[in-house]
View 1: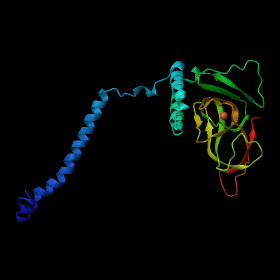
View 2: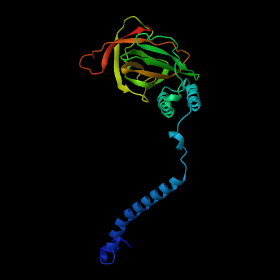
View 3: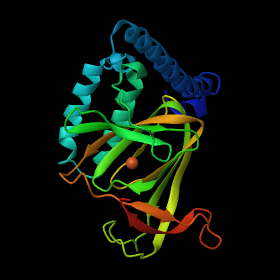
Length: 255
Ligand SMILES: [Fe+2]
């Protein structure tokens, strides 16, 4: 039947044509809904390949995942840092916090409210633990060749991240040269929360412990053999001009 036919014979044609035009999308829609329902019912019967992404990881399972990925990081493109950091944070979320090795401080006493040291060596990666007394400050510093995911284990603290401006000299130049930094993240860390830095994003971090102190674990992986290059910064707390997040800063070395 054609539209021409319907024009010639309204009673026999045009209603059928119009009804067909309306019914077609309705019928297709109904078919799609039916197919979706059928697929959903079928999905219930099939185990998805990633069904275990929510399961707990043992310490050994976590270490195996992390070491395998960490070994590949040095040859990975910079853009892969984000995948690595996000994947590592996901694995950290799956290991019970009480399964993580802890720092043996022995008879060491805190210096400026801070005790720190390596607590786990799943080579080529390393975990460094920071025990911060109430109000203790871990000054802003960078990690040029490393990707770091920081986990809050106990207490709470504030973290701030910064990125250097294009005019910044290398962090090995400790000559008082000033440059711009931009605050890129400010957050509260409580047990189980993580924050991260990569070679291209949020590369400076600093922490201030809350009223009950804080314990942090840095899950660190170096992308080169250079694990010693870093520097603290002196950052002017007042923003530049009318800016809300840009500050003048200078590298001040490792002391
Ligand atoms: Fe750090």
